[in-house]
Image 1 (spheres, rainbow, N blue to C red):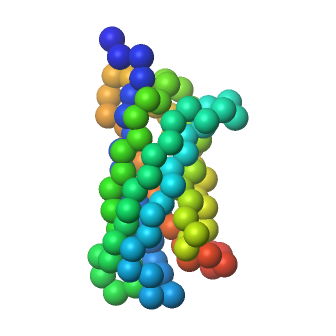
Image 2: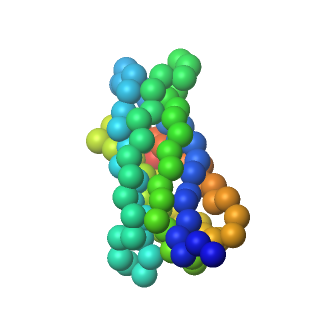
Length: 101
């Protein structure tokens, strides 16, 4: 039986500044401790939209905080439950720096 799992998903973002490519840093934490890091590149997918996929491995079972950050976008802080016996998916939508909804 596996002792760690992988989290995958899609990242989408809207841009108002003409950004056509952005690197997104992904950090997973559990109980305040970083348990895994990764990065993904999102690219133009339509007018004022960027999109891409990511994968982050080595995650322990249980609740994990996942943080998506980039110099171009507000940080998205999310939580998900990691299960060692099934696929784990979490999608993120990012907003341009300074934009709040």
